[in-house]
Image (cartoon, rainbow, N blue to C red; front, side):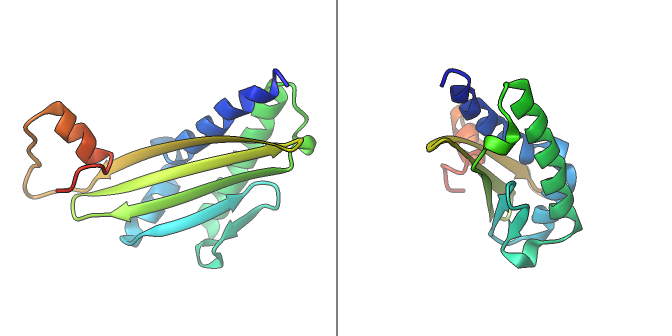
Length: 148
């Protein structure tokens, strides 16, 4: 069980990395949609859902991150074949000023579930700069907790 608890960290790292600039092709793809999006990646069945989002960019990300996950699992001393499920759910929300992206990862093994999540905001080019009274207000705004 001791090494299994490390899967919580791996789930977080998957969620965080997938929506970071390291996955720029995917981020550019969802940013151009300019509408709310919910995409699910299944790394065991190698599927992207809904089907409308199954394309070269999402399939490439699925394959690349599957390889990355298998390497990380082996680093933890866990055989990738023993994993029951690895799901990643991506959702976006667009405003005039920004795109908020949230990723939730779930890894299931031996009847146990390990979850991780990450959230990031991407600022869209603006003609008028955003102004905030405090750093806290800016932080809350970019995390999507404060309305413009």
